[in-house]
Structures are given as C-alpha cells and as structure tokens.
Image (cartoon, rainbow, N blue to C red; front, top):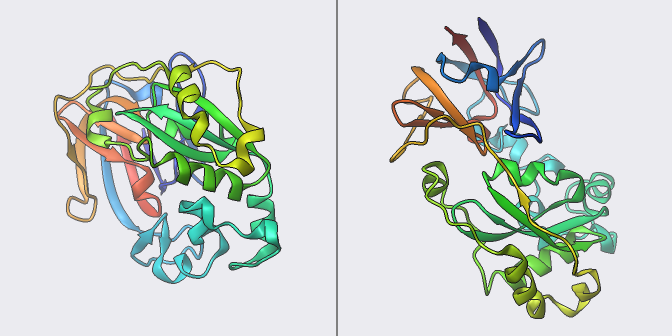
Length: 264
C-alpha cells in the first residue's frame, strides 16, 4: 500500500486503545491497522499548510511568512494569557480571534511524563490529552474565554510544571498520580477572576495508547537530514510513531512536509 500527501496532525478517536488516522487530500489511513508492519517514509517537498507553497516550514506547519501573518499563528495560541478578543482588541484578525477565544476553555492536569497544567478549548477534550501522550488527565477549571484560562494556567505554573518530557513519555517511564488530589490542592492558587469556574466534582480520564513495544531510549527522525527511512511500526503515542529500532517520528512537528508512505 502506498499513500502520498502533506503531513497534518493525526486525527484521533477515543477507544481502548485510541484509534489514529492520517488524513490526506484524497485518502486516509487507520494507523492502528499497520502496527507490526514495515513503513517507509520518504520526504518529497515542503507544502505550507496555509499558502501551499514549497517553502521551508518555520513553525506549526507554516512557512515563515505565513507564520508571522496569519491569525491562527498569533502569540496567543501558545500563550493564552495574551488573548484580547474579550476586550474587543485585535491582534491580527479580530473576527477570527473572537471565534477562537470567546468560547469555553478548559484548564487541566495531564500526566504524560509528569503532571503538567495546560489549556485547551473545551471542544478539544480529550483530543488535546491524546496529542500530549497523557495516560491520565482531569479538568480543573472551565472558563468562558481563553484569557481567563490563560491567566489561570500562568498562576498554577508557579506550583506545577507545564512541559512534557517527550523522551520519558515515549519510553513509558511514568508513574500514576492521584489527579483529583492534585486538583484540590491547586484550587487555592486559581486567580480570583476564575475561582467561580472551578470544577469541584469530576474524575480522571484514563487513556490507552496503541503501543506493542516501548523503546528503552529514543532517537528522533529528522526528515531533512534523513529524507528516506524504513522501519517496523510498533506503536503510536501522542503524535509520535514508535519504531522497532527505537526511532520515533513526531507527526505534529513535521506538519507541512509532503511525503510518501509505503507499507509492506
């Protein structure tokens, strides 16, 4: 089987285990069905997710020009506390920013390599947790806009981490934690403006990933340096492929790369 197209973040479907799908312009692939098969990845060209041109990808699947111009790559994406649509203030495109920012957002705890705090739109639960490779997660606060979620995350970051150790996550060297206890312990640090949105009564979500074999240590595949790679796919966790030879490939960080996939 052969597939060809530009890489985008894999779509997911909650299940035991989680189902992963690669979606191309004219086709799609259920990745779970190719576990334990040999997969050859060949880099063909760049294709910016916005302008479609063959330009080097700068960040988030966009060429440098698009990254600094389009509204979906504004600083508030990575730093929700910079959101200003609730004030009627434009960053790059106020109408776009209103649609994205003025909707329910969740502040959560996720445990992928360690416990971390994060923010996402409510509509992206549990997708966001899956993308981060979290095996357990819980909601803390549900706010009516992105700004309030952002300032809550900033406040909680003084007491708990906000980063995932991707190597630890991929080797599955993680401990279970009581996230309900952590949620209750962190409540006191939620800003006054967001206290009314605290979620007092909910339980952990447990996530199971389709992995047949975890690596002992990992080596990351860089398609620019290694434009052709072949290996046996042993699992998917977060947005990573895990191969038998301990190579891992981050689909998310390679968005905008046009590739061919040969499965045998």
